[in-house]
Image (cartoon, rainbow, N blue to C red; front, top):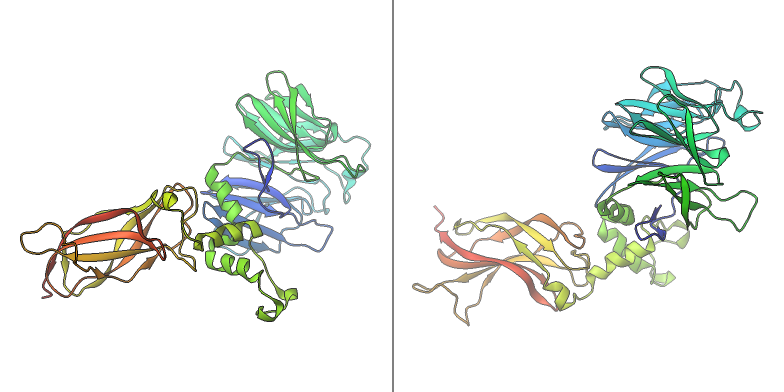
Length: 440
């Protein structure tokens, strides 16, 4: 997976992928699992914090796309020439359509939803295994409407990634090396000559980003993203990719990129342990190296571990807490109060050793007739509470901060703030007067 925001591919991880889709508040991702090899379908989903779910789907062979449709991810299977539905909360998928019972006879691949109907494309209707590989005519591919049971596009050359935009269809005709524009009735209007095996399309205004694979047989060749002007169908530029193949291109927000980058690093404690264990000598390792499992990229693990280092005072000043305080509390009560933690700095915030950032409450007794604590008044300190999960830059989250109300009734100035060992209390704080009433 790569981030192309800057125009230069920034690698996020090295998991080979054969399908991406946004839906249900998540990014869905199916990992490559070739049907002619010993493999199994793996479906993952991400939210802004990282991996949200992982499923192993034994029934699906050779997954070739995933699409969120009708409240659930749907996966195409080239081996079974079928489409499967994975309902939330279930361990087993349900086959909702099958084109052929001959293994990989049709090479069903990409999925798309048009007018609330699920569509699938395939290389053609062949009656033997991988018959499309040596067919004399490859222009027999089609896009099929599962609701009506009819083909909406035909005579396509190894089609991938069909998309409909207004009254126009766009399809990657892979063996022609083109992005093909078709009218609603399927008539070919124009072709953009990418001159590579095309697969993967995303639209940005009047432009299309089209994936083009490396040319097989050229060891030094790599894939590209072609930038196509949809007004002229001319290729205006090409973005070199460090990989051999492109499967799909999707437009996502920064939260999705952050979630994919974090991956299984949602558990910051484990990611930090992974990072720190890499510096230990063999004699200090808890297990031999040949059973070590690293679920988080080294870059992400290092970034999360950096949260345990001293905060820069200028960065710390951009953080803080906010929220309302109760006007009255009961003496001796042990409870929690909800507060919002803000991170307006450029670095992630979290409760990570050796210098964990935490949130705490302090109670300053107010003398009769005074609205501020005296300069020598010692506060009643409460236990510090953690920032419950990693808080990325420019984000906020609500936590429950531990509260132990003083035993002595009276008027108190209450302060709630962030604290880091060595730095002390920092950032914007909550401050206000709370009256402690006798218990009972």
